[in-house]
Length: 283
Image (cartoon, helix red, strand yellow):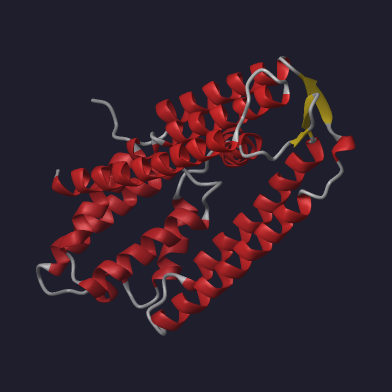
């Protein structure tokens, strides 16, 4: 008998806790968030999700006898969660690099497809310093966000105030990351690698296909339509390069049509996610 995936356990856990009271559900969701993010790049996700599924089953059974989550798991869930994490199997160094590579790789993909490269009439310019800078900034922002989540979740006192302050801190992190991203745009393009037409278009086509295939094959069902976003963005960059090369005329109307296509893609993505969520809730 094949073992279920981490996503299956996650979905089943989320369905189970729907039957809990609002306070118990919030308590468990905080515990769930803490366990998943505390050692996000060092502990086996499947083992964590299986443990959470078992805990949710036990809590649902206890709630039928009138026992609350804080009474069942204790007033200091953080200490219990930390002890659980020390017993969880560690992932290999290769798996850690794969996880980090996925996060950074997705950022690089959308940097590439969103105009993050220098461009002129003759060539597309790949600036390695900009890509390294994005990875560095993203690493700092991710570490700060995980720290904020871990510090402010799994609390039984002043929960509303802590959530508010955590939201403010996260907003500051995002603002700082955005400012750093804008600063990266000032890196001179002469430090980049020039790729002439038609090799630039061929590279864009290849990256777009690989990115779309990754999202469609590897991602959970609710994220699969991001492949469509990738394709639309890729088409936009290809049209820009063809216009620079004089192959097509990229008129103002063409830009408007492309912008409408992007908006429609986002709408489709949102509708798809709503459909997936409702389908899971009804199953």
